[in-house]
Length: 157
Image 1 (tube, helix red, strand yellow):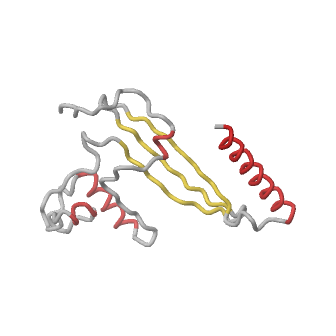
Image 2 (cartoon, one colour):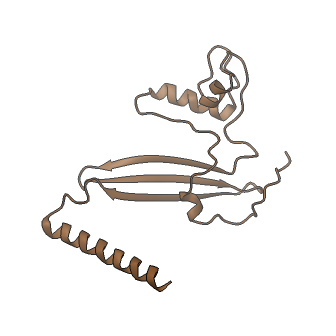
Image 3 (cartoon, helix red, strand yellow):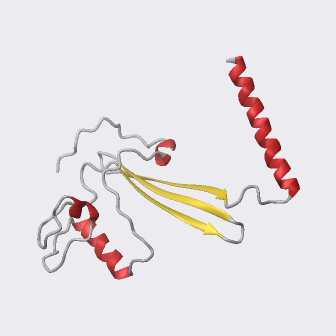
């Protein structure tokens, strides 16, 4: 297959590119309420481009939105020559510490076929002000210092 002509060079992606979500052309949701068989069938449909769905309806959402949901109508694979980035995101709650962690696993595809991966974890407290009085004072003091520094930079520049 010939490679498509993209403007990106064959260099590793910047770290900020893993956190940015833009130009989402294909979004699929895998929900916890769905059965494992249904999720694996949907993943196979996405991988094969709905080939081999003669006896059933294709389960991937873009095929259904495009009207290719009829039995036996082929769709398109979810990763092809034009794919630049695949992002998998999930939210985890740690009840012991009262923290959420948004985990992003991002794969970047180069024209040469090289695949770079980035794993980004962003955590935050469920209730940042639900600590002790001393903890709240520290958080408020840090916020006040940050505002003063921001105001100083604004005045200087």
